Image: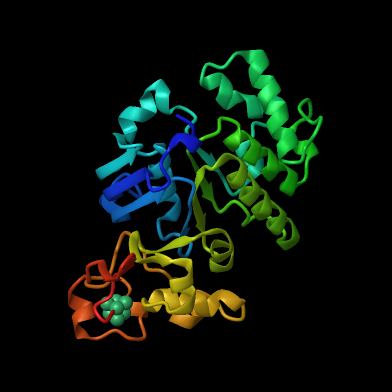
Length: 319
Ligand code: SF4
């Protein structure tokens, strides 16, 4: 089924109360500890939309991206791709190549010993497409991202921006339903960032994949996305349209991210301190040690994610 044949209001991906934890042991005799990377996350990714996921480094965004792609199984909860359980679907041929990823560092995501033509053709071969057809489609996709006649060259022969174009071609060559973009422009210069963001917009217009766009940079997410999820210590703390988030943020953490957006002060400066460790999460609202609005109840009870108006969810006792 291609993207055009899906209904506009059809979710391509649904996360239902997803959690993911890891057992950590620092040394041979050290006590085992639980790192709660993602806690009780639910959302839908609709056909052809660009959904932003924003938060500080270490908040669990990338783990959530890997859960959405099927690279990592959840500890609990369900990931549904086109209504079917993703781990099961990921093993079957029908879903192969339908959820693709673009990573922050295009150099490490491309095999240095493969020509870029072979790298881009590889996902098609994995789907069982004939080798000659795969190469033709890879060359055509490379031309679409602005790189003509480069299929015999190797990744080290390209600039960072060009390598990210190759990564985009590799992700889009199978015409996937979903592309998880994990900090895709964070490693690039500002001028090149704009080119790659525009390329991702062009590719979405042409091929209609849904993007889950992960970034620590609210400016970039605001440029790309119609809807935004704000994540803090593994939980969604605010979910709303871009316009709502930018004009009237309800969660104190979202307000801090917006205040840090101009680059004059970091989120750590505005909030007085760094993100706590996901191994030792604060009791009550996990944001309370940094929150300028915290009151007694915040130190005792975890607030639920509640709907404050249609389509607008906030996890805060005072919202
Ligand atoms: Fe701040 Fe309390 Fe709201 Fe948490 S629940 S964000 S600590 S006001």
